[in-house]
Length: 348
Ligand code: NAD
View 1 (cartoon, rainbow, N blue to C red):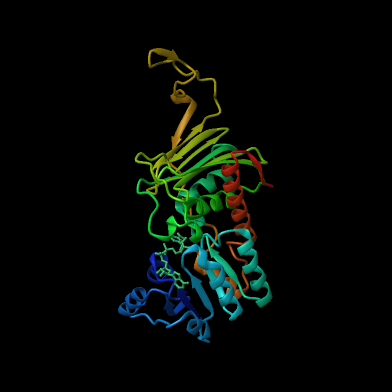
View 2: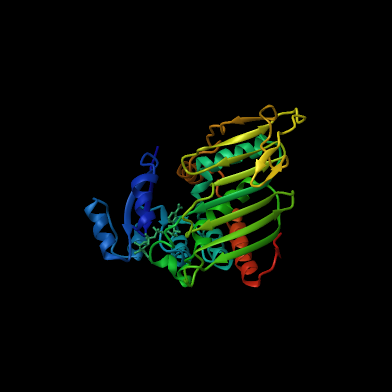
């Protein structure tokens, strides 16, 4: 099996993670690295990697078939277009671009050059997401009607360029794109309404977090939240179905599913709540529910890089499709607009 030769542009956090951890060496061969920062080039050389003196030199390397772009977000468009025009296939980090107009410019060149352009929406493979997706698809707790997907940190906005609007900083573009991509990949229904609130509590020019509330045509509502000022975290996932509910607390996958039994006639016992008594807010009786572990789940589709290889060599269909990436980008534009106008907006 012939390996595909790949070069990386941007040897920062994610570029080096691709090189050291993600790229399967039985499928891809690293041709070299380019970074505008000489220190990064030096680091790559010290790690024994080949480097290029310029982006043009990388593009001129005839043995390179694929260019992986892992630079700040505002650089993606021009680098991707130049690589496609040089006849290279492109893997691009998320968020693909700063807006749909930039993405359309890339896609037009990909079509004209007949080169593949594939975005690294890697969190479609996250184990927590795959569990939620399985419970959604198999109706383990009945039809889901509410989904809450959150990531909470307490360290503010990381790094340097993520603080700068012109470079595509802010948490909606950074983490929001992952959580929204997961939801839209899972739920096969148009989104009807979008409400949103961006957070600027750290006084930066970009959002340090956001909450958006989406209403799907099939009746599901979803709350998506990213926070960087959360000293106390809420669960990663909280889902409600017509026959139960579930929580995944964190990346360690702790949490449980509560599945309602058919016999709903078991009345709950009233409880003392504060200075009052309640039956409404009492836990369900033990006979009415079963507490279960989340199902262990494997993706029914190949890994990101295996899929890219199959697309390039065997004509497979990409798992991360460009029309899906474009839909998520359009949704993020609508979220920015809904927050700025303070209005609930139509989407699809
Ligand atoms: P980073 O700042 O750590 O690294 C970016 C690197 O790109 C730096 O070394 C910088 O010198 C270099 N660079 C900047 N402009 C360049 C240019 N024109 N040509 C060549 N090199 C250039 O940033 P990062 O955290 O690695 O993020 C890079 C990209 O990866 C971003 O798009 C980010 O959103 C994405 N990312 C994705 C994930 C994921 O899970 N998929 C995680 C982290 C970051």
